Image 1 (spheres, one colour):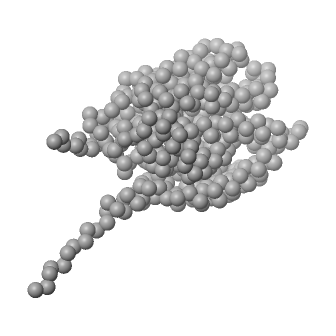
Image 2 (cartoon, one colour):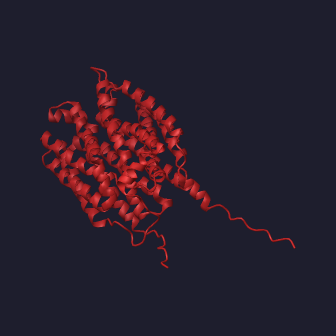
Image 3 (spheres, helix red, strand yellow):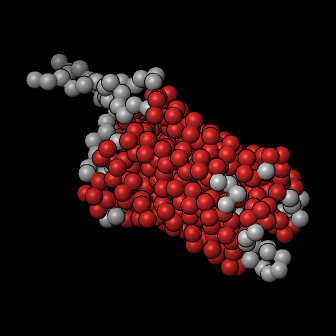
Length: 419
């Protein structure tokens, strides 16, 4: 009789995760490059703010179109093939964007090419965790992978305004293109699909079987709505970060700092909250904490006129909203098991892309003319955040909690028989 292969974790898992994270960071830098410099880019390319916003929104449109093919590749060919494909697209079109940076049409086409690579990269977060990490570390591994989605925009928010002011838009785009190519080479050299022996249980259904089973689960459908509102809100606010605060007299440098603090808060929150979630083997309380905690921060970003209040609110908003991401991804993988992680991950992401498109266009349509104030749309987002919290209350706890309690239940001891 065959003995079962023991589960074992390898130190190399952190190298694989780091190579993945660096690639994801650069893809996200290229996505949100223009958000903190909307007005400067509009002047440079002699176009409108909305057209500059489309350079970010095209990522969401492309994601919606190809999310199923990318999920299929992740779940059938593995994360190395999928992320490698996304890395090559990001590198090639990142370089063309930099080389032809003075031509808006070439920049837009390059953005589409980079956007084609995005779902192959960010849809693989839970697959990397499942391949290389034991069950007790998977939310933490997802947090590190998801952090890349925050660190990329953080770097873009902080660096882009300074680079543009010092070397101009064309050189800034070329610098980013070279960095993306270097990240792609690093990933292709370092990534391995499997460890020598499994790190933990990873039995999954075929993609389309898993997809059908997911869409029949009420709890997963509710989670999709939670991501529709939460991730769409993040995408829209990130895209319009300068336009949100410009009518209150803030500069592009302050927009960059606000975006940086929002994402910096998200990084801290994702690390702290995910570690607490893994340690307690609970998901729901931390999802609820995140959805409730973001509301005061969003209020401050909507009405704050003092820099200190605006920046504090941005940090709090990011801390809570973005901490929900990695826990939500892992929670989805746990409640839909044995459906493939790549499919659940990608479905949640596509909800945020769809809502991001809707919210970006809606925020532009609802802005007050001629000042450009976006207060009305931000108030609507506050109301949607309250609805999100109420919806999340109805979600059950992850089955991982019950399994943990069952495995750690003290064994009953038999008392000696009385003679």
